[in-house]
Structures are given as C-alpha cells and as structure tokens.
Image 1 (cartoon, rainbow, N blue to C red):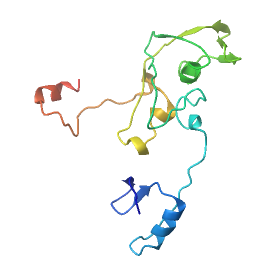
Image 2: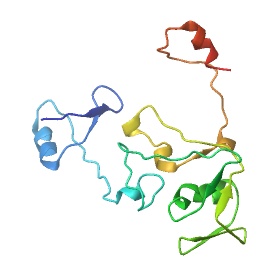
Image 3: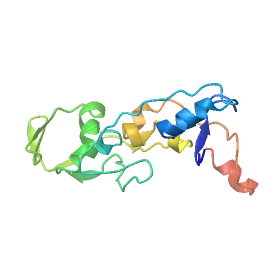
Image 4: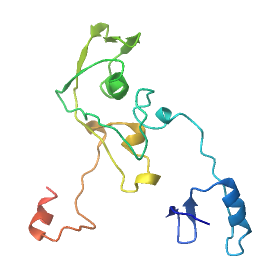
Length: 170
C-alpha cells in the first residue's frame, strides 16, 4: 500500500496513517483489515494551527521557526509581528489590558507602549511524541505560575555516566 509512516494508537492492532481516499478504499477491501475509519483534517491555513497563529509566520510541525522564550525582567520591542508571540502573555497571564491600533500602536493599561517588560518566567514545552502531541507549538508559552509539579525520578535514561545521572534532578 506504500504506507511510509504510521503510528500505534491504542495497541499493535490500531494505527493512525496518512493516506489518500483511494488507498483507504483499497485497504478496506483487504481481508486482514477489520476497519478503516477516515478522520477529517480541517483544511485551514497553516498559521491558524501553529503558534503564534499569524499570517507572518508560515511555521509547521516540521519547521518551527526561531523565537525568544521570555524570562522575568526581559524586555521585548512590540511590533506587528512580535505581538503575536506575546499578546496572550500580556493579557491572560500578566493580567494587563491590551489594545492594538493599526498593528503599530500598543496600549497597555491605558499607556501607549513600544516595549514590554515581563513579570514572570515562561517555558516552551515539547512532547516526546512530536507528530501526535499538542504542546507549545499549538498553545504557546507556559507560564511558570502554571507549573504545579516537580520531577522526582527519571524513568528511563540513556546516559551511561552514573555521576551525571544523579545530578539531573535537584
């Protein structure tokens, strides 16, 4: 069937594959296949799916561009492009009112601003299952104030130097 890429979903008998409708029809007729279920992928512009949800950035899961992850005290210049990265931080996480006029004038808490200074630390979180995950590539930065746990042990480690292994968790 020329299927080059597939993923186990629940067990070794259920797969998620990207194929054409005609390949799905052929596959469904095969006697060893129990069921073929087509999942509709919405046909939306790339920028609506991937953070920062902007027509200025044509990023994808395979190509995610360069960005600056803000730390407490960092200052960024606000412009028509950068606001897409930091709008949610300014409004949702740092509880400011933000009005944008003509993509060039940024009014934060009633004051016209060209720059913004961050109040908190932020993280960019990636899942280890790149193609089937919803991580920061979809929902953006994670505020430090939203982290509620701490790793206490490492389940699997490829590092063979035991001296480094124990220093990884503090």
